Length: 217
Image (tube, rainbow, N blue to C red):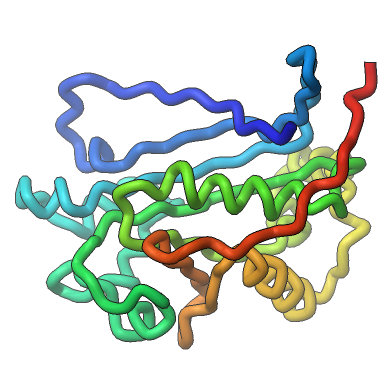
């Protein structure tokens, strides 16, 4: 069984704009019938409660600007906190004022577990489970091999551990392949931007079953 294991904590009486963001980090696991498990990846999502911020008359840019992981997503809204036309054109459910956003910030599948569509199945469930109450699911695809190359020595070590050197070093080709991968989970590119979005108000595409894998003991 593929499992998303995660936890979340909230600071009570938080008064900063980040109180409208719920950040959830977790693991992607494989479990067998005895509940033994192995960790095969990790993920991070951010739920932005735009509607609550509007109701409380919060300065909306501050809500997005409180994290470098979310500030760029503010560009997907107009002055009324409706989605810009480029977004609504690719949302299959049509226009609506349901401004809350689920940001799929990160998904990594570790070496040895790639090629089994675990990432797509985890991505599909992340949309279904965390997208409740959101009018849009958004991401900014970026091939990890280029991110880790820009980091410190620790990043270089992780680059090697994740075997990211096995992926192409041609950025445009890597990005095209990644976007094609995400389209299988219902995402569409927003013209003129780096973003891809999916519509939580329409049925997610079906994926073929994951082949059975035994957990090594």
